[in-house]
Image (cartoon, rainbow, N blue to C red; front, side, top):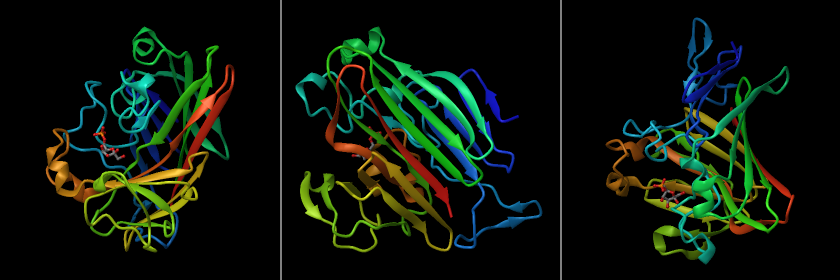
Length: 296
Ligand code: TA6
């Protein structure tokens, strides 16, 4: 059965064994289980073939009951990333409200080539109007293929006034942060949140997160590889998400109530987004951004 619709979540299944679970709360992907694709990863093989492996980190102390944004998976940051930077957004909490709103499950689309897709909808409501007085419709599509997960966010300005927003997909990839490698980012300008947002240029061929890292790379190229050497390599290809944040709190993560003990040792966040500027949509216009994650 390609789709299992439950009261608080949807599970998509691929015939080759992959699966993904999306909470209606925040349309948050909280699991992506897939086989590796080739010999570039240490592909544990079982009697049934390549082992199926969980690709996302979700803290064991994460709230999955809708009481607070999930500490893990793919929280959706919209209509802002980080703290409000504009007066009009001052009522918003960090990273906006998309990740802490209950989305509606609209439909499942089966495609022989693409895989199985689930479509989620969030429209403005009395609650959001109080925080963000702009009519909008968000359509989030999660597509599961044998070795790939694609998530796309479409934003429609359903109001008469311009709609300005940022968007970011806050991926928590599962793996040992001590060996994580992200590239290519050499020569890319970034804002360093660890150094009070100072602007700098990346000089390393390979970015690691062995130390507390919180860097927002601007116009970063849109295509990246995340490697956990001798374990797994993940390709991240994006459309319309020109910036990328690389984050791991290391021991500072112990201050987060929903971070499991030493949780920071077991993930790295590589977060494609449109965050340096704001997207500005006129009445009736729409925007879409996408990430294609492939396990190599
Ligand atoms: O994307 C990195 C970041 O902005 C960090 O500064 C840290 O705040 C992280 O997001 C988690 O934010 P959250 O609001 O989910 O605790």
